[in-house]
Image (cartoon, rainbow, N blue to C red; front, side, top):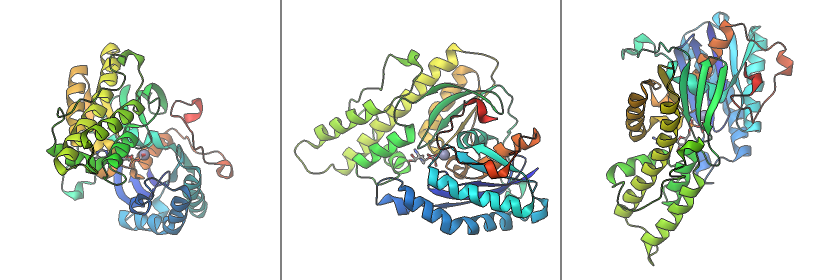
Length: 357
Ligand code: KG4
Ligand code: ZN
């Protein structure tokens, strides 16, 4: 089925057209540079920017897909988790378009979207071939984004059990905070990665979060953040600023510890629960990090599962193509909103809430 999908859960205004798991168009208008000077997402600013851009983004998604409007079978939209006033903008637009086209609405959980991003296929016309996205369920899924760090057991599409989530900060959030401490701006995950490549991950001592407690099946990044703050102060000594080499080394040390914690907790679960899963889907902005990918390859090999990553970095970060792919699974099962008028934002929607279906 052809789906027009919309996501305005945070600071990206996104729309896409998908046909089952094939991505026909994927438009993302990021607001990151507008929020950068505030060091984080400003909800009111995000809402206004979504309102100004959403119609254009949706129009572009339809136009670039080459799909006639009447061929669209349903509209998919993220209703949570995310920023309430930002979600509202996408939901309103989705209702309007669904009403105008006289098509049903499919509500999607944003995390569910990140899970299914690894199943998206690129059009053959891109000339770059397409990866094997034939995922067998049950499967593991690891979502690593700015707002979420969750290892999820996917019994089947729509049936989720969270095996581990974070007690405090998400991995992307922790990387952003570390980058900020090093004066690298916001969001800093990608800049941190670049600098970390030139640094030595063993140049300074930094304790691994909750070391030795992997059995607790929880992620936690607040301790690492505090330890990093102390380390920076120590490295600076009495000087005002860090030099370039110190920044690169600190970036490498911090990123390495953050990833090692993710891997250790995940390994404890994957290895102890060796089961019939053959695949691990991985999505979210941090999944575009090459150093993390390397560690994930080692982990999945050890756990006997195949690592499935989105075909492009654009599909790792927030986008609507992943929402279209997730929506198509629901559409196939006839899971449409029964009353469009009642569809509402659900900012704290957990993926394992029973109402997920
Ligand atoms: O999935 P996403 O776009 O939005 C959320 O749903 O949160 O993820 C954004 C997060 C930010 O924390 C950003 O710093 C991080 O993903 N990120 C990266 C990289 N690219 C984006 N972190 C590490 N390495 C990267 N290359
Ligand atoms: Zn996201």
